[in-house]
Length: 76
Image (cartoon, rainbow, N blue to C red; front, side, top):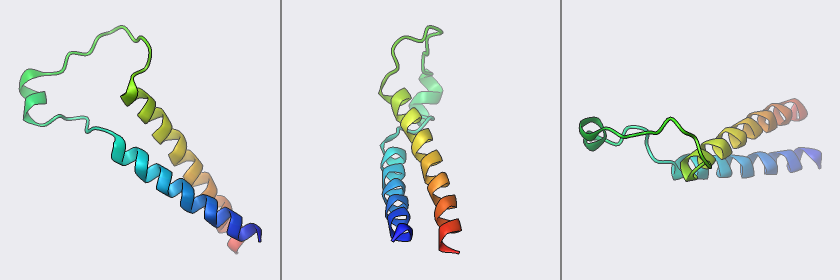
């Protein structure tokens, strides 16, 4: 029973990770980003949507890796 719970959690975390990765914009914005450049300020105020997506992606990747390790030990 525990095996199926962890497999379900792993599949759910994989779907969440895929969603967050697909939601992010690319770092290089193509030709317009190289010619015009992107002005980034040195001051960091409230985190924007991109910063939050990066943070959520990082934590969902960590949870996926941990759940994968736990699931591999349980299935053995």
